[in-house]
Image 1 (tube, rainbow, N blue to C red):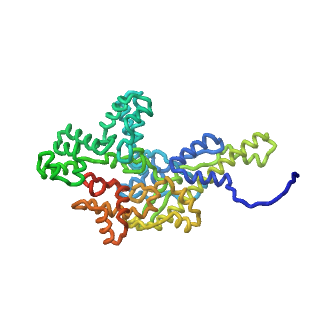
Image 2 (cartoon, rainbow, N blue to C red; image 1 turned 45 degrees about the vertical axis):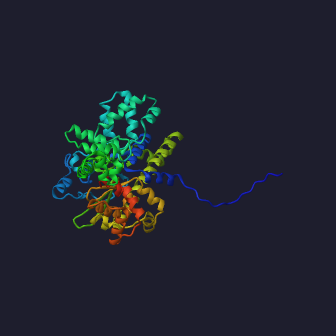
Length: 478
């Protein structure tokens, strides 16, 4: 055996730390970026955040605490306020965060993001009703509500996980089920409807036949077996029909819908805790304008002290010890890299959104029916980017449209939304329950060819039950 040393060259791909940091910043949502900036400022004495006295809604100059541009825009038109800010690049390190508006009425972000999610509202109400030791149970139960407001765990499971008596869980669940929206916390459809029936009874609104149907004949009702139900209850088919109308119009099988998803995700605006990362506004010329909100409100910079120290370090290096030189270089370089990554994030978001606006212009003007098929790969190809860059830039980020509706970036890449909108319209205008095949046939007559199973999938995504359960169908609010 013999030990020898050899020198050889080898080609390989290595990811630089700078690229890793840039990718991390690019993937952050607006709120996550705020947290990252706050942490960086707390750890890096060479970087500071400077607030600019501008309107948090449009970026224009403030007069006292009021933005004249937003005020005049809201008086004249319901569309997005114009951006009157200067587009110059005076601040190369310009960065925006979400600052609280002085006047909430003028800030579309406040209207969107300051709302309380359903989960938070439920817990706030329960906190005033329960003992402190019962709150962990409330948190666990609320955390186990699904998008429709149903409880996805049993009392026994909750008791076991929290190591508390089942009676304690039952008590907290009873309190939860007494909150609005009525029916929240139910464990199945029957319990959900009965909770609502009891509530209406206390309000003086009652249909005894409807109560009996919900208790014992839900399946028969779903199958439209009115004669059988009437025979078993000893009432006429007309009485059953009246009771079914009561159930259909008075009760809601999806109590959380219309209040946003329980975890505060993107849903109805009354319970949405999302902040738009990008604003798309429309000027009087009908041209669209894109603004990444990390601009024109705040900017990051190297602190004047460290700027001076870095300059002196180059001119008079003998004035500093080795530790001082190392400290200055380390933190100044770190600050420059962080600021550069934030600026790169903003520029990437700007380019991607501008291309999307051009590709989906008809959607912005005429609504979801005109949404075109668009992929992240296509955006990346036209912009000369990697597809993963587009995916990171649009992941978990939201856009405010000219009509002030906030949607996830992913909606621009979901052409099926236009088809789902047609399905919603068909079901909303149906005189009798439409089957999935009937809907597929009607779509085909309109030039939209999809399979029956695709219709069923879209029904599920929209929160619309099959035709056999049409008496309990409720569509999601958009």
